Amino acid sequence: MTQEAKKEDGAQLGAKEVTLADIQPGLEENGSQQNLEFLLDIPLEISVELGKTKISIGDLLKLSQGSVVELNKSTEQPLDIFVNKKLMAHGEVVVVNDKFGIRLTNVISPGERVKTLT
View 1 (tube, rainbow, N blue to C red):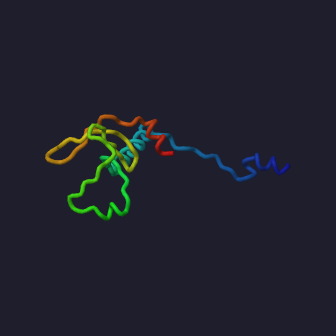
View 2: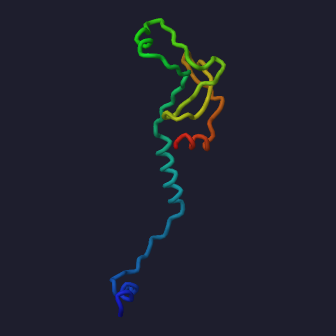
View 3: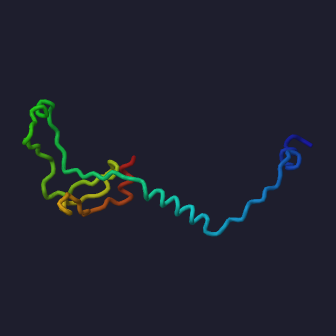
């Protein structure tokens, strides 16, 4: 027998037949559901950006209590909403139980979100 024939002959190499356990119905579904449950518990940071501006270090050093910094967005423009520092939506400020809130006015499509990852 040639060396190749020995490799193809399972008995020559000591290979054994393997019997796989039957797959139990629902096991895969349950595993996937458990994985999904794990993902649902991951905390994410949501932040809202009112606007941006650039100032010099000199102007920054002149800021004091009561100073006003003008931002680049008008009050009519929607605010940017970020999830883990990625733009996910736009919205407007609301008040909920004497606290600031944000009403979503536009959610970025999954395709557009993927583009921001690259």
